[in-house]
Image 1: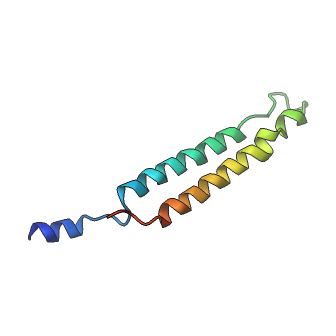
Image 2 (image 1 turned 45 degrees about the vertical axis):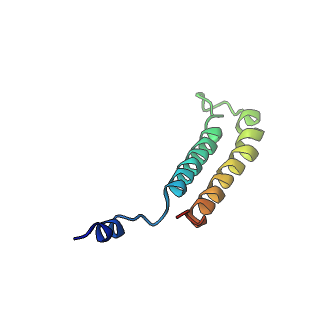
Image 3 (image 1 turned 60 degrees about the horizontal axis):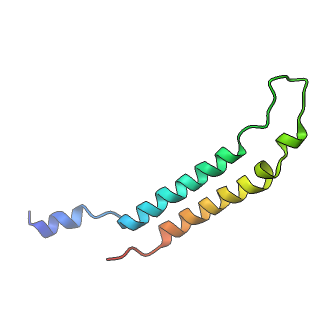
Length: 82
């Protein structure tokens, strides 16, 4: 087997830059889900609506997650440099 044939078999579907962007998008999604965490109470008789339905959990976190998914789609669709 020649070197050219060996190189053709080991090519990935996406370029290195695409995989870096995919990793960044994944981290953004994780950050969005971490922003949603919390707001509960240890006592089942206590309901803290202000903390549970805060701007961070209801608006900011879903927007960050959505941006992460859109970034992932862009990272996959981006044409790799040759």
